[in-house]
Image 1 (cartoon, rainbow, N blue to C red):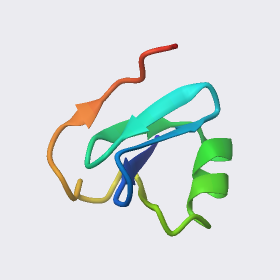
Image 2 (image 1 turned 90 degrees about the horizontal axis):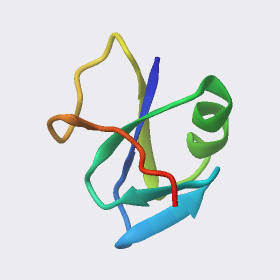
Image 3 (image 1 turned 45 degrees about the vertical axis):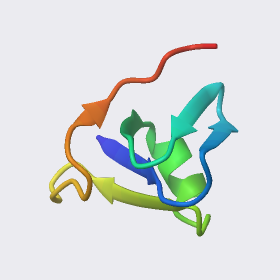
Image 4 (image 1 turned 90 degrees about the vertical axis):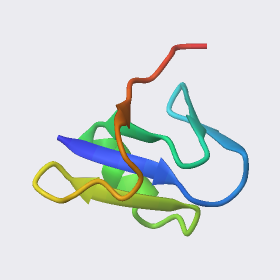
Amino acid sequence: MYYATLIKGASYYAFGHRFLLHKECKITKREYQYLRKNDWFQVREENTIPPFGSVTKFEKN
C-alpha cells in the first residue's frame, strides 16, 4: 500500500480524487509513482510512519 499527503495548496485534483491539505490518503502504486515527483506531495509506502496522523479514504467526486 502507498500513501500521499498534500503539503502545499488547499487541495489538488488528480486521478479522479481530491487531495486535501495535510490529509493522508491511500493511493495505488501508479499514483505513487506519479505523485512522488510532485513537490506538493509527501508520499510513503505502508511500512513507514505517517507524517500527519490518520489515513483518509478518497471520496469520488
